[in-house]
Image (cartoon, rainbow, N blue to C red):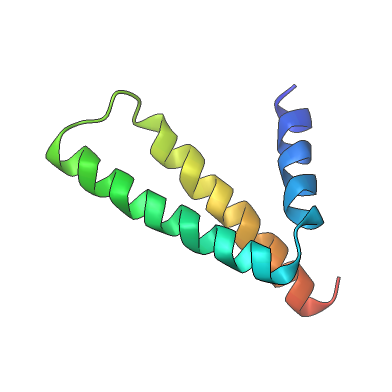
Length: 71
């Protein structure tokens, strides 16, 4: 079941155009920085959300790189 969810996320990123993908990456990186800061000041309820967000950003950057290489 986890693979199906991951595949759906990848398909969502593939459906975005280049500009939308870049802006989404920027938004998520800002969100990650805010989450890191808030976790340092006051521990967040579920610290695994930081890991999930980091991996989401990595998936989007992978899609961006795949497009840059022409695949």
